[in-house]
Each structure stands twice: as C-alpha cells, then as structure tokens.
Amino acid sequence: MATLSAVVAARTAMLPPDFLTGTIYVTGRTRRSVVDAVRIAGFPPAAIRVVPMDAHRRMDPDALRGAVVADRSWGQRPFCVVATAGTADADPIPDLADVAAEQRLWLHVDAYDSRERPPGIERADSVTADTPSGAGVLMVREGTALPDFIARG
Image 1 (cartoon, rainbow, N blue to C red):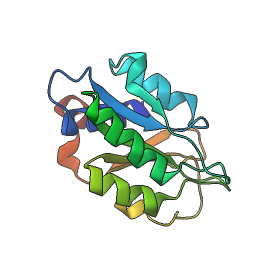
Image 2 (cartoon, rainbow, N blue to C red; image 1 turned 180 degrees about the vertical axis):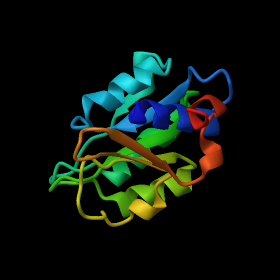
Image 3 (cartoon, rainbow, N blue to C red; image 1 turned 90 degrees about the vertical axis):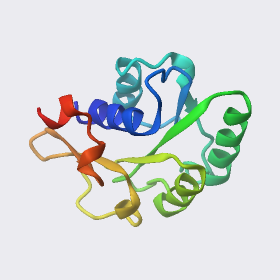
C-alpha cells in the first residue's frame, strides 16, 4: 500500500486527470511491488520503461535522460523515476535526482529496510521503506502531494 500510495501521489502531482500516457522509469531489478502498484494505479503496461543499468547494476542516469527525451518526442508524459536504495548496489540517487530535477520528474526511492541513510535520499519526492515488523511506510517531501483519499487514511 505504501508503494501504491507513492505512485498515486506522483500521478496526481505530475499528470493531468487523463494520465494514461504517463511514463514511469524503473530498472530490471526494481521490486515487483513497484510494477504491481503502477498497474493497480491504472497505468497500461506500456507506461513502465525499464532503464538500462551500468556495470554495477545501478540505473544509468544518462540512459534515463535519453529515455525521457525519447518518450517525450513520441508524445508520452514522463512523470516518475523509481530509484532503489538499501542494497549494496543501490542506484546513484544524487545523479538520478539531478536528472529528475532537470527533466521535471517525481523521484521516488524504494528504500527497502535500510538502516543507513542513502546519499541523496533527502532529494526524493517520496520514499517507501519496510519496518522490521514488515509494515510499509511512505514518506513524502510535501504532504500536500498526497491525494485527499490517501491523506485521510
């Protein structure tokens, strides 16, 4: 539910009500729950773009930038990039945050259950984390980004 709420918050903040041309960027190692959340949020399968990884199995910021520019030229609406944190091969969040700012994308960080604060995570628009008890937690930069039905619980 935390990931689904993050996707809906990004969709609401970044896209018009007709959001079906929205595009979200992930890697081949993004958790399945993120892909499931995108689909449950109403996006078609084509809305999910898998960005190539670098030699360290991290999202390649240059490949992300290229995919966003290409998608815009094809009439898509890039709106969100999902970075993975909390693993030994965490995505380069500072570099992805730079691309997100430059390209006007929502930066979501899927932080797993990391005990350490990943560099650049403070630049994320939203972060999900798992608690030791297994509950998912969503944190957002701006509470007003949460749609009313999420904010009310």
